[in-house]
Image 1 (tube, rainbow, N blue to C red):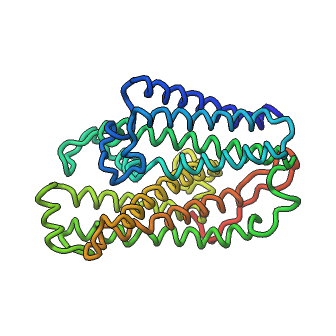
Image 2: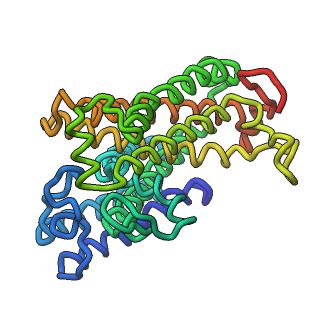
Image 3: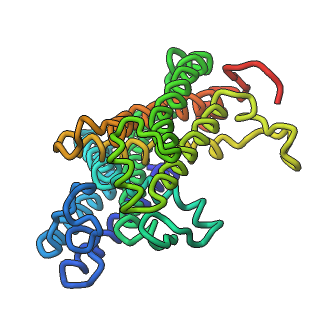
Length: 360
């Protein structure tokens, strides 16, 4: 197996070894266990692992990471790519990646990302529960979620690299045809962008309405109680809504010419091609944390934590998995349209296939 193919698996192995050591350290009494009593959400309203006891729980964490290490080493060293052992390693890597990416993080990860731009410029601001800074947006349990997300992405990348090595292919097939062709991706990518832009608008409208004192989707008592118990709460919600709406506008760049060529009004960059990863990486990351946040609300809804009479406080968020999936699909379509020629087989040519016509 080539060094290039092994690099993702080796990176996943390094992450797994480090996290296994961290889990063992917690098991032996080192402070900082990010779940259970060490989590600011001990009642389990957000995290699936909120009730995990640091005693046996830390050993389970270490065992999970050790299993990820075994899988990563198998992906890096299996002598017969594509054999039974290799297929088992790929399946295990994907299963572990799904758990790390979708099950362990919760909505606080998206909240931290959303509030970071504001906190970078203001340092502190008067939030609904007093002064809020970066340390409040990113406590250790939430940073740990980011760390677990990284591990899941490394395992997924290792599985993809191994499969390509096993098939001795770049993953494009004999021809760029069907849904992966640039022309097809331009069509379904446009639909994905439309869904990604439209889905969060209901959430945005409710939060903007609340900031204006309009009880959209909630009772007047709900609105008054929030204003009384947490001054500034509805302004914080309006900020998040505006952040989401601006994100929707940026999503349009995945199907517009200005998402592929810098427009004239950007000094120093005008007319230059936009590096594909500049759009793909943040769009993919945001898609993941949106899905995770939506699943948090779906779990809470299934658990009966919300009242139907206050649908505005939870129902729009339950559609966030659709929003995130559409954004991820739009990023994939953008990638398929803009990927360069394969370095192995030479397939593919770089040309712009936008879904809209116009100037900058």
